[in-house]
Image (cartoon, rainbow, N blue to C red; front, side, top):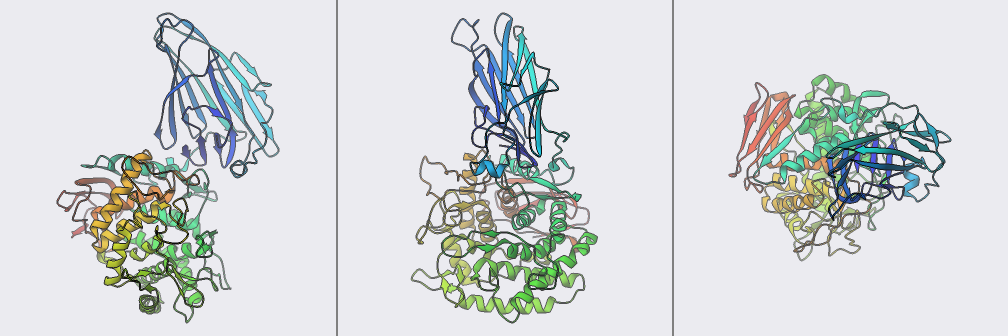
Length: 637
């Protein structure tokens, strides 16, 4: 899958586009070309190898024996290089001892279907082609696409959808044909990820061979998923993932931008400005909300509202982006939208304690209380920093919530207890152990490198750490969405047992920050092992089957790959090892590294703190040494 949104190119490992399933070149969610089938001398090249050369490109190598071949060895190599921008280059290389004259045929076709229709099995038949500018063109109501070849073919047969060349190859010679797939009326694709400065070019190296390619792939995937706000092209944000969710998903965009703050604050600012323009106006109970769709929560709870999550994430991202170096002018421009989010929170809770989701008759979810508590504390910090009212009220409510949560949400059992998934409308706890509990460990960054207090006390935090590190939750590849001992567990259930990369990364960072390094290291190493099986390109989720010797993690058929939260999770995982906690307004950065150094020595370069390049090295002794930082930035440990 080659991605440079709004462009996509999807195929199997042979490189042939057969017109089946999701095969094709896409732009803006429409399939411009479904079939691109290459034959040389009347035969398909034998596939030899396929690999990604970048987030937006792939290479396919095949071989064939010509009629002039005298032995079993192939004498022609056929190489195809495919780009998400709609370009494909077909190169033939000859190893024959005599000149070759080979017919090359490319069969093309498309249905111009929307991705949603294709996924639902309603793509429709291929459209008839017409000859256009030495290539082929297809059209239907409201859409048209063409393929422009270079050099022009010897024959272009519209009825068969066929382009044909006679290629002459000298001994050791090469010949190339290039195809450009275009939507009619549209110019060459200019992906938002090519905008300079959107994300810092971070890189990693060290004792563990996995960290370098993993970070490289993560940054490349984030760039591939960048989109521009159509009305404000300077503002970029992340699509949720490809191929299924190539548009804005507010909660995922905010969460990914937050984890990607070590790559700079430009993405956070663009995401915040884009979502501020969607904020619901008043009056009314939804005034100040960032709207978002419902999300399935599994069989134990009704669907949650991602709008609630996004509204609570908005002030958190703004507050933490300020700590990482978001300029004060941009912070102040976004502050009114953050204030409206915080006003919605207090207005919705009113005199109550818990924030229900969906409001007002839904359950009080564990993770929603964690999001609300963090938003209140970081929001209060943000308001105080800019001399705005309301901070005291937010902190008082957060204190009340903390006391009530510790009494109401802890479910005692013979194993020492667990946090409830939720409280029902009548106050009964839903006792199932789920990965959503990791949000209790994600408390948020305040000033001077201090983390906000959490909803759990130290004793309950210690017990949660043991639960997350136990086999019922740790699949050996990462954290299951629901424990194996819980009713309704399904290793492929996206909320009931699959390993979700984002939640695993939050668990690693939260456990490390709380001092539970053994449990954090186990989850970290399992996830990095899984990443190797996925070519260092982590999917949104994968099956939570128990790891055993000689096995590999099972892909989830509905997972996005690349996915914004999965790629951004890699940034969180690696920077958590160094424990980087900046406070750009105070011109300080604190380092609280993982002392056990679970990956050995690791160097992180090309990060950004306080608007300047930042590099840090974690030694094998668990010491974090800053190698590059902004002038005047005070370093603490």
